[in-house]
Image (cartoon, rainbow, N blue to C red; front, side, top):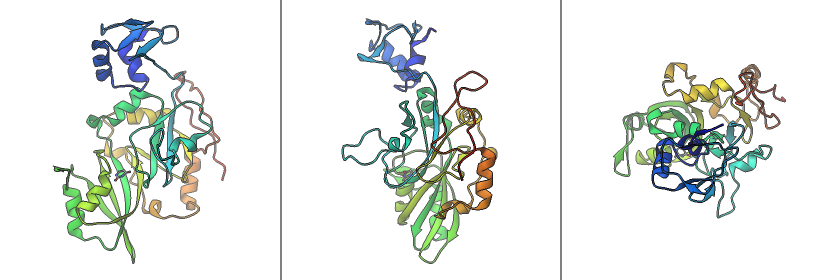
Length: 296
Ligand code: URA
C-alpha cells in the first residue's frame, strides 16, 4: 500500500514526521534510486526501495510494544563500545529489532518501554506530550523538608531550572530515606542531578511509572507486551493524572517475591514473562493481544 514518504520514514524510527519532511526537502530521500523532494510523494514499502542518505528504510511488519523491568547493570543503547550488557540482551526471544523509548542510566533500574514503532516512540518522547515519569529514589541519610520543597519547586541544572515536580517522602529508614519524584521532563540524568543539586546522595534509583503504565509484578529482567489499550493510552497526549495509579511503597522494597496482593493483581492483568509471544488483535491492526497467564 502506498503511504506518504514522511509517514514511512517516521514509522521506521528515523525521524519525526516534521524532521522527515526536512530530509525530503533537502534531497536526502530516494525512491528506487530517484531522489524525491516533493512533500506529497508516496511509495509502497513492499515494492519500492526507499533510502535515506543511501540507507534502505526498514519498516517493521508487526508493531511491538514491550515493557521491561530493567535491572541495574544494563545499557539502554543498542551497542556499547565497552561491551557492557544491553537491555536488548534480555529480549532474546524477540526476533524483531526494537529500541528503547528514552533511556535509563546503566545504574538505574525499572520501567523501560521498547518498540519498533518509530512514530509512536517519537510522540511519546516529544516534550509537548509531557508524559509523567515517577521514580523511587533511595538516598543516603535523612531528607529535610526544605530539600523536598526545593526539589518540588525546581532546582538549577546546567543553568536552567527544572520544572515543578511531585515529590513525596515514601519511607524513612535508619540509614536511608526513600523519595518518590515524578517529573515531566527528560533531561539527561535528571533525577540524580536534581538530588545532587540539593546535596542528596542517591544510593538507588528506580523508575516505577511511565504515564499510565506501572511495573506491576514484573521482576528485574522480565518483560511483557503492552496491550492495545495501553498503547493507545500513551499515544493520547491528553491522558490525565486522574487515570494514573500512584505506585505504592511496596515497590521500593527489594522483596524476592511480590506480595500476594500484587501477585493477584498481576493475574488479573494477565502479566506475562518472556515466554509470551504477541499476536494480531481482532481489530486486525497487528498490535498485541493481552497475553497469557504468567508462570508463578
Ligand atoms: N534520571 C536519572 O538521573 N537517571 C535515569 O536513569 C533516569 C532519570
